[in-house]
Length: 123
Image (cartoon, rainbow, N blue to C red):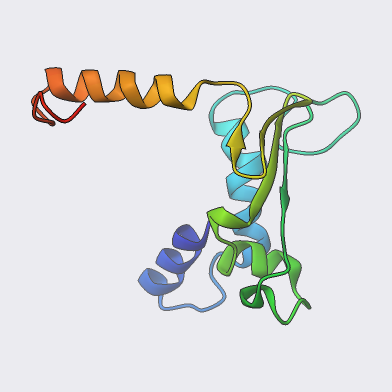
């Protein structure tokens, strides 16, 4: 969101191009539309419950006056404390709940070796 907004502001030399609320809509509702996903991208009755919870206690969230602006320009991945997809919690407090992270690391390493991206001794 931040990059999309700042790139448009810089390339157009217009500080009002792609304001924070537009960047947030691009990342949620319009992204879902671009992927032809139905009933996602907004919190509405009957739609899939896809959402994130963000910890706004960090100093980079201050002042807390413009929450949308803070999400787009100051938010960091470490601020995300919970991710829910279709009503199911898949990430909470730094842990992925639906996959075996060690297995993923191992499988990615094996594939990287096959592609020559890692020496065979690095697994």
